[in-house]
Amino acid sequence: MPAGSEVSEPEQIPLARPVVGEAEERAVVEVLRSGRLSLGPRMQQFEQAFAARVRAGFASAVSSGTAGLHLALRAVGVKEGDEVVTSPFSFVASANAVLYERARPVFADIDPVTLNLDPAAAAAAVGERTSALLPVHVFGYPADMVGFERLAEQHALAIVEDACEALGASYADGRPVGGRGHPAVFGFYPNKQLTTGEGGMVVHDDAALKERIDAERNQGRSAEMGWLEHDRLGFNYRLSELACAVGIVQLGRLNEMLTARSWLARCYREALSGIEGLELPCRDADGNARGWFVFVVQLPREADREETVRALAARGIASKPYLPAIHLVSFYRERFGHREGEFPVCEDVAARSLALPFFPGMEEGRVARVAEALAAALGR
Ligand SMILES: Cc1ncc(COP(=O)(O)O)c(C=O)c1O
Image (cartoon, rainbow, N blue to C red):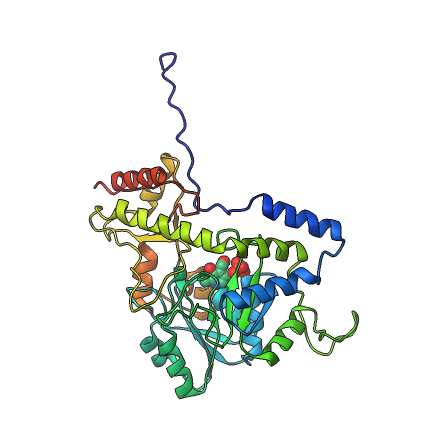
């Protein structure tokens, strides 16, 4: 290669990047200096502010979304031998949480537009052992809760909402996801709309549930009990004061971060709209508003997804097949004998979906770079 003509590495565009800054740093230092690193005032402050934000009566901070799902399922009475009807198009944790209680996740197919569990398919999956429904607001788009509430009423089922990806989403009446009364669980992993590093929140409108969830996240101690007293089985699912302090700051800037995500989604929609055969995330409809979490496209059926990922990576652009169908991951295949063909809509979507870089602060120029690289990779 002649001198001076070295090819420079393309600038790397990651899939996600948390928005944390000096305010979070100051909040963490303050907690460190206070000497109160767990079970202190920040937890209660974070819980109250979060409950107000999603218009729920109560909130319990927990160590992860997964921990929150586990506690919520226990709190509504899911037990060994029960069946819980849920979506196969979700992060594996939603189904795993059911298994923690030796209950069985029973999958039903998804709606091809919203990618959320289809209430009609869920209805067909309800059986004698079904005790709960676990809809997931996948990619931040509100699930059809009116449909699930009707179904739950018909069969006397509990509902737990997996809202881990849906902070900021709302319904036609303006009610936020999480504000419908029954337990809903949010997650605060670094790719989420709000992060505490690791963390989660269970929200609902039931004082008795709050008491139970708080005790079970804290080794089975109720509020008035001493450190070595335990009146039930519990877990260590507490969220530290450090994490809660970060959460409080993040909540204060949530609107700004959500606005940045919505803007970015609009940029992507415009930049990608000319790529023939590429399917974009569904638009908000029927008054539902997505809380933007990821930007996942469906590649044309003839496209080679692995090759597309490689082509984007060669240009410094991260992308990821997202999400795999839960029933087809090796553990679920082996444990339950699931096979291809059971949930055709989910399988088709899972085989073609690709997450593109998406985080507040990503500039329009980078969106254009991703769009150009994707078009080239697809031969468009
Ligand atoms: C739909 C869904 N459910 C559950 C979880 C689990 O949350 P966490 O990673 O905080 O345990 C996540 C996030 O990672 C998720 O996206």
